[in-house]
Each structure stands twice: as C-alpha cells, then as structure tokens.
Image (cartoon, rainbow over all chains, first blue to last red):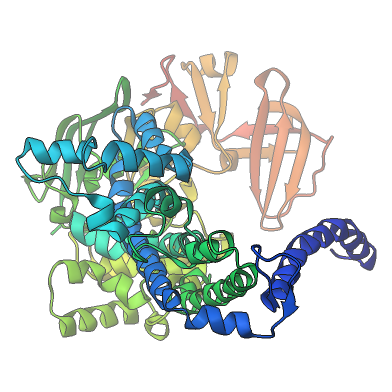
Length: 290
Length: 335
C-alpha cells in the first residue's frame, strides 16, 4: 500500500465484500432492535404495537432470566475449566513419539467433527440413559444404582457433553503450541538440571499461556450460545435447571411465540457477551500482546 | 578440574554411523575447537559429551569418571546453544539464575552469583529485561552468563556465533576467548568456520565423516596437515593441490602449496605458468586466481598491493621448503 493509487485500488476492491458483510450483519440487528420495541405475539397476528422498553423490562425481571444467566456462566466456566485441565495432559501425551501417533491424534480430534445434535443424542440414549445406557450398565456391573443423569444432575450432564465436544479443540491448539516449543530450550533446561516437572512448570506452561488464552476466548464465544445439546437432551429442564440465555430466548420466541420479548432477550445476550468479552480481554488478553 | 577423555566413542542413528570411534584427550583448562564441514558429526560429538544424546559405544570420562550413564545435569558441564535457547518469558536474571534455582540454592546466593556473572559480561543494566528486548550480541552474552554462573567443569559451545553479523562475530570471538582464559575453565567449541577455529583454539579437532582427521594446535595443523582433507580445510584461501608430473618429481601423488607460499614472478619462465583469471585487490593483500592450464586453477596470495590484472601472464614459483607431499591415499609424506 505504498502509493495513493494502490490504496485507492485496494479500497475499491474491498468495498463489495465489506459492504455485503455489513448489510448481512446490520439488517438482522436492525430488525431485532425494531422488534424489541414492539408488542409482537405470533398468537395474535396483526396486533403489533409500539411499547417502548416494555419488552426489556419484562425479559430482565423474569425470574427465569437470572437463573438462566447463572446457568450460562456455570456452563461456560465449567467447560472452559474441563477442556483446559484435560487438554493440557492430553496434548502432552499426544506430543510423545508413539507408534500410530497420527491415528491416535485423528481419533482424539474426531469428536469435534460430530455435530452437536448427534453427539447429544448419542450421549443421551447410548451413554447416559438410566436403563439402557452404558453408564447405567457399568454401574450395575459394579453393583451401584444407575444415575439418572438428566434428572439428578442435569446441568452437570450437559457440561459433560459440551466439554467432550470441545476437548479436541483445546487439545489440538495446545498440541500445535507444544510442537512449536523450541527443542533447544528443553535441552537447555535439561542441562540446567530441571526435572520433568520443573521443565513443565517453568518452560512448557509459560509457553502455553498464549494458546490457552486463544482457547479461552474462542470457546467462550461459542459456549455462550450452546443450544443444540440442551434442546436435544433436557429441553432446558427439569424446571429451569439447564436453561441458559440462548435457550431462554428460544423458548420466548418459539414456545411462548413472543417475538418482541425474544428480540429484547437477544439484545440482552449481545450485551452480556460483550461484558464477558471485556473482562476476558482484560484478564487474559495481555498474553496476546507480542 | 575439567579433563575430558573420549575412548572409542561411537554413535549411530539406526543404520547411519555418525561417529565412527573417536579417541580424544582434552586437558584441563584448554580451549578445544571441533571443526569440520556440515554433517561431519561435530555437533553430535558435542551433544554426546553433554549427555543430550546417548553413546552407542565407547566411554566418556570427565576427570577420570565414566559419565555415559550420567544425566546431563549431573555431568557438571554447561552448554551455549546455537539458538541461545533463552527462556523467553524469564528476565535476564531469571535466565542466568535458572540452573542455580533448580540446584536449590538460596535466593540471596543466586542473586549474588547472577550479579557477579552479569558484571563479568557487562549485562548489569539489562538484568530485568526479557530476552526479546535484547540485541543479538546481548542475548549471546546472556547465554554465556547462564553457562558460567554454574561454575562448570567445562563449557560446551555449539556454533554460538553463527547468528551474529560479521563485525559482532569478531568481537564476541575475542570476548569468549578472553573470558575462557580468565576463568581457566575447559571449553569445547563447535564451529564450521576455520577462522574461528584457528583464532580461538589451543587445540583443534578436525572432523570429517564422523572421524577425527587430526588433533593438534592451530599452527601444527597449518604447517603439518596430516592428510589432504586437513590440508584443504585449514587455511584461507585454500591450499593449492597439484597432481601429475610436478607431484611425481617430488615423489608424491599430490603436492600442496599454500597461496601465500607461491612466489609471483611477472615475466619469469620457471615454476608454473598461467594467465590471471581474477585479481582481487584488498589493499593489504592481493589474491590472484591463475588459470594454469593442465594444473587447473591456482590461487596465489601477495602481502601488499601488486599491480597485476586479469589477462596478465605470470609464473608461480612454490617455496621448496613449504611444499606438502601426500601419497595416493591422501596421507601426508614426511621427509
């Protein structure tokens, strides 16, 4: 971009793409904003009327809102914790030269390719089913009472499923980071008399700080909007025990057919995501600076 | 003390023999340079001594004790890596003190030793900086600081200057040599640069294809190369090697004459006749690359300026006392 001419050329060539993206994002956002100020129920078509901020007041004072906000944060936090705490040892293992390493890596990454609805169904019906599930069978084999996962520990069950899906992602990012760790640095630590544990604490872990940040940021974006796993397994229940913000908005719009308050909820979710992002970047984002 | 002895050391990676039996005696306090072309096994030999690779056969003695089964940290050696291998997230202080911390020293003692090492290397103002905030030469010094602070029996240097620019390299060369003399610690230094080898070493080990070709002081190697390989490798520009009649007259298969031992005669008829292909005038020296017909290209060096140019005919007369003779298998013939 050295000359004025190339700058002009670059901008003209970029304009269509940027313009399209802008429209693509701004139209739904504007429509959501518009709907959020209407009384708009699908059960009563033609009765739309302007109600100001009434929908927001309704959504924010709904007792379901605080419960689902809490569920959202617990879900995001737990899955982040699980994927990173399990991802690091898994990545360390996969970094070792073993026979069939490539095959093992492929198998470990596989869950990431399974679509959320399918994996949730597999967990629900084949693994966690209190009568015919694998876990129930295992419990019976060792003489325990099978756990009725989605009734007794619904949120924990959802966390398990989501963590299982995201563990490969964390492992993969951490594994590539491990492979970029300079071999000579490890050898220098070895010459300096560091044990395997010390090398991990003083050399490997600081090296992983940046990829861990990346994992946290990217996973958070997706985990704030977990929906399919909840929809397929618990439907937000029992009660509100597994309802997160995304599921709450869904139930406003398509169970209660209240488009107005669902739109307000959607905007609230955008604000929450921004607040979370703000704190995340404050806490872990400095790792990303050069 | 830091006397290192290699006895029949061998190393193979699978079917590939990298080191084919090395015997070497390194005296305490000496500066030994391993030199050779790339792939000759010099770095592997250094890593074997360090303990970063396991030997396939033979033994390595440090102060008379066989260390082949001793882990690297327990051998009492320290190493300066080619990439420096500084810990990027630690300050200079943390980098230099890491080995001491791992050894479980007290904090004030670590600080005292780190500061002493930093003072020796003029690093005191940079102690709190991170490696990425340092220049190449400073990083190099931190890597050396990390090596000296542990007061090892010997330093191992793996091509430590190859990432520096030419001017800095000369400066660091002098600094490393002076530091080693000052500390009196044994040092083993790997390089592919024969100028570094000649200038820094007390003794040079010339390696080729996993074998030690010759072990001796720099001038010994220069004046009495044991074979054709050493003759060609040591000295810059390279020694002229001539086969055929001229060699047969001296009773050898090949004779070698260094460029500086060829007398340049403008209009003489004796010696080797040829046409100058390229003349390099450096002011202090003049290098002539002479096309000598059947003898091939010959290089001659003249101390000072000599006004000869490409296309001029010259004759080159070798100094009879400085002719190296080699037999058909490449070994030196002694009178």
